[in-house]
Amino acid sequence: MRQFFALFGIAALFTAGLSGCVTTGGGSSSAKEEVQTVEVPEEEMADFTCAKQIEDVRYKLCDDPPPTLPFDHLSRARSSWATFKNRCPEQMRTGLALRKLERCIDQIEKEPNMLPDDVATRRKEGVKKANEIKATEEFAQASRRLKKALRAIEDASLSYNDAFENGDEKEARFQGAIWDDAEEQYRKARSRIEAMMQHVGLDLEDGHYFGMW
Image 1 (cartoon, rainbow, N blue to C red):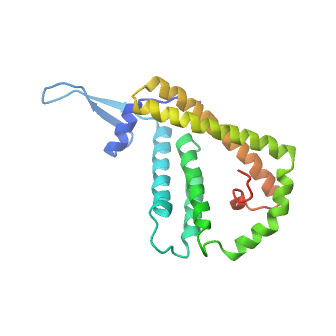
Image 2: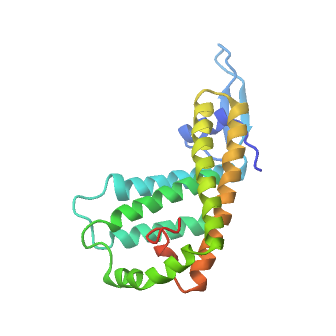
Image 3: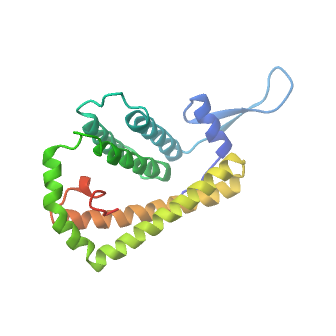
């Protein structure tokens, strides 16, 4: 499991807009204060950065969209998700942000005239195959594992954020490790379900619609 370092330093990092390290004052009243450098692990930086970028895109797409949605609003949202999925590290903040973006995509699909006719047809034709997958014990096991991971993520992420805000570095590291491990369990369970879908020719973009995750 990944260890978490210098939580206060990482928070300051994003406030300052720096990269690679942060500086903190030594608390001296003299004109020249001693400056300490706190190194931030590269993977930690990548996770923070990607999650923030994903959230910024999600906000523009679903929380602050234009009054009249452009015809390509849904395709842009899906393209953004795919780009971040392929580019960003598979870590806890990024995983959570990607699922929020997926929920944003589901929201856009419900808007009038957003869902292309070919997608609607594809989904209608895929219902039988999806139901056959969901009737198997293999899917039931993967689904239970996925749901258990999501519950662990919800609890650990909330506890992590509380500890972070309270400056409790030890508890934040502990909850962060639980969150990180739960994200890994989620990825494994979802990958298994995705493999079942691909085996019968179902499009992974339809996974949420079919209730696969």
